[in-house]
Image (tube, rainbow, N blue to C red; front, side, top):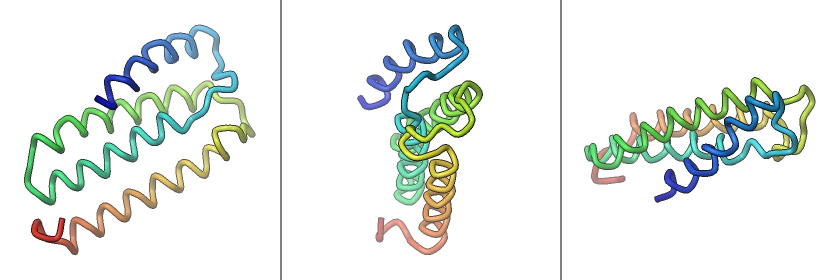
Length: 112
């Protein structure tokens, strides 16, 4: 459900960003959040050994990272309305990835 809605929004936004050569004042948050939540759900799906969870969320992670890269390519330097900055989103994603990695190494399926 959530990727269908986000996918529809990005179907409109990504071509416009490429055509206009700018993100305008669009936020980065939907794309960075899509990538991060995909990673979190993949981690959960792996922990409970359920491909029905991690497979579709892998697709969400890939699309989220792709949309993020398109956004980043056309985002003006110094943009601070994303909310915050691109660096904040990058740090948040890396922190999320680190938490997911620690979870995978320290938790077993019964803890998930």
